[in-house]
Every structure is written in C-alpha cells, then in structure tokens.
Image (tube, rainbow, N blue to C red; front, side):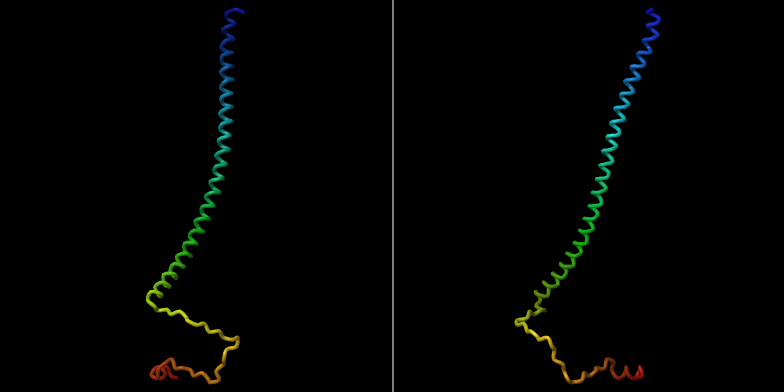
Length: 123
C-alpha cells in the first residue's frame, strides 16, 4: 500500500468510526428519552388520580363541616336554653294508650277578624 492510498482510506475510516459512535450515542439518547417519557406519563396518570381523590375528599370534608356546624348551632342553642332555665325537663313520663279520647263537644270556631274587619269585608 502506498502512502497515498493509506491517506485516502484513513479519513474514511475516521469518519465511519465517528459516524458509528454518534449513531450509538443517538440510540442511547433515544432509549433514555423513551424511558423518561414512559415514566412521565405514568406519573401524570398517578397525579390525575390523586387529584380526583383529593377533590372527592375536599367535597366530603365540606359536607361534614356543614353538618358539624349545624349540629354545633343546635348544641349552642341547647346550652343557652339550659343556662337561662327556659326549658324544664319532665319529672314524670305519662304513657298514653293507642286510642285517644274524643271529645263530644263541638269545637267553636274562633273569629280571626274582629267585628270592624268583618263589616269592612262584608261578612
């Protein structure tokens, strides 16, 4: 082999080895990219699921807070009534039978309107 032939083959060999190493590097980068994309997609799905669970828990928490506020308002009213003595507790319980006594007297209707209203309305 003459030196001229050697010089002509040498650059091709250097370029081909550089090309092969760049192809290998590109393949490694692509594999890393696909793996990272897969991991990112899985994380996004997990975050979406966690977000929906968090929204459900927040809604339940709001409902429970409303119920607790309602019960606390009743509790506060009951405590105020007990403190002021407006409510007396029963000392004895009276049990009634199944049949209620029926009064035989007719029930009188009470006039809702006084006489001057009846006159103005034409009754």
